[in-house]
Length: 241
Image 1 (tube, rainbow, N blue to C red):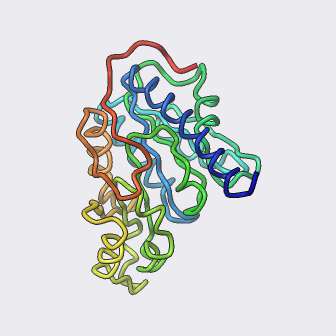
Image 2 (cartoon, rainbow, N blue to C red):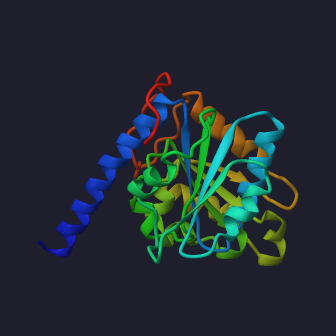
Image 3 (cartoon, helix red, strand yellow):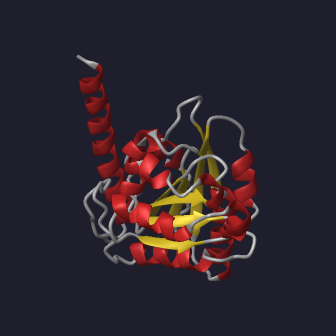
């Protein structure tokens, strides 16, 4: 079997596991939100703010955060008061659906309505792996450059929502937001782009609102490289195991 065939077989197996996990979570009334970005984009701090805002609004959420090593991000996220688990990939540069299912077994609180998964910091490999998400959010800091969507078209082209982070640094970074929008829509026409800043709280409520809309069955944007067909939630029944 050539390398291309092997890769396709691996992705096909992952897609099957992801579809099964998505169905199981849907029966429990849980929506999985997959967060993708480069390292240093600020997604951990932004997610911490979203989790805290959910707590203030009485929305039962949880988070699974992935890294190659250390539990630093889980410690940071847990300060929000939300249930959090760390997933160590032991050198793997992305998460796969089987890893997520295994980590959720016997842990996910029964009242959870939204599960945020903070993927490994990487815009290449994670973009190809469906994790059973209903909503895929790709984040990029203003310090990373306006051409990022053109350099990583698979990631941005599969996003249901794109988030600009660290907008308080846009001026010093010389960030051309109009050009960034053009580049995003070149690879993903019509996708919503949200401005955010963890330091000021900008965009935090919007991100939570979009996650809740997905939970409530609002059809997400359909990207050209959609990671999965949209499926609607079903009444809760069998837990993930």
